[in-house]
Image 1 (cartoon, rainbow, N blue to C red):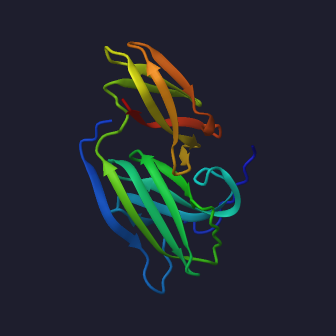
Image 2 (spheres, rainbow, N blue to C red):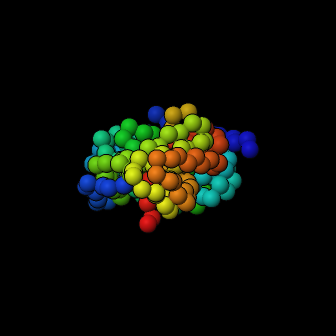
Image 3 (spheres, rainbow, N blue to C red):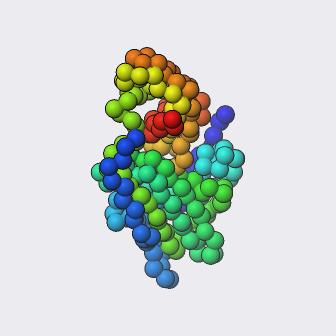
Length: 218
């Protein structure tokens, strides 16, 4: 399905340690937020607030016009487990963006989770963030090897036992950027010892799948 993108506006797993950061933000009374805006103790860089028209991956693929969107880069050396960013606009309305499983150095386009709109005239007055980070990538690397080719994701069992009830979580990687702050979950019923299973990450059809988390539920 063809998407129309309008990019206007203010462009200018075993986890060793999980770091929870308190609420922080950009913006002062009577002033607009300037970009780039650094959040989460400078771990996240928000480079722009812009408009997007098309299907919103962060709102169950609901279509919309001039949806509020943020470009965010994890500029830390840690895995961003989750983040909630709230933008307060000049008219008092708020736009909320949710990020999940963003590796170090990766940029993501996140869209308002309720398909709320944005216009350049309705400037951003405040941008706040709550975030949590982890030192290690949550890919169960000691149990499975993960390879991607297009939207095909292959998991190989590295253990000496059968693995059952796994879930692999993927982002859609589009031109080097994650398209949407949310991940897609794909269940894997089982992988026999020494064998591989391939799933198709159909929701990542715009680009390619990027596996960011593997969980074992049993």
